[in-house]
Length: 138
Ligand code: IDP
Ligand code: MG
Image 1 (tube, rainbow, N blue to C red):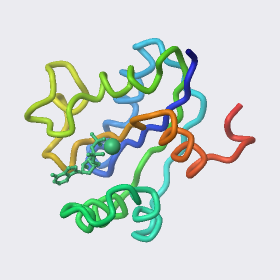
Image 2: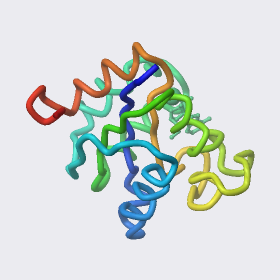
Image 3: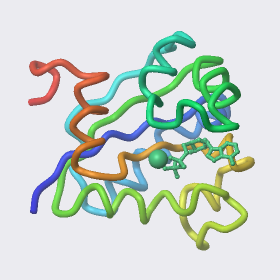
């Protein structure tokens, strides 16, 4: 089934000039880049985006970090795009991520793990529309 998924290249990765390399890894897996842009979000916007994690011990630090520098947000499309991107990303903790995954290659620690990817159809829908308007999603 063709799906769309939202990815975010996190501040630790944009800072080290890894954005194009990471987008390229996802494109190379056969997924189509639908839309991409860079921005800096506020703490409040990061809290809204990560609302499912509200109340968790890492919520404060995560939303601080995600609003601390430039991010690149991108929508990819393809067959099983959500799970494909999750696989290319690797486990949340770079130490536990498989060889060759983005987080294994570039992640710094469990928080500064270089990339976000939607984890379900429902979250993908919320996350894509959080960052992109209809006319950007051609
Ligand atoms: P995911 O990004 O692999 O889906 P989630 O559990 O949804 O992982 O967590 C969202 C983000 O919160 C992670 O990517 C990471 O940046 C941060 N995070 C998750 N667990 C921890 C933790 O135990 N300590 C610090 N940060 C965490
Ligand atoms: Mg998640």
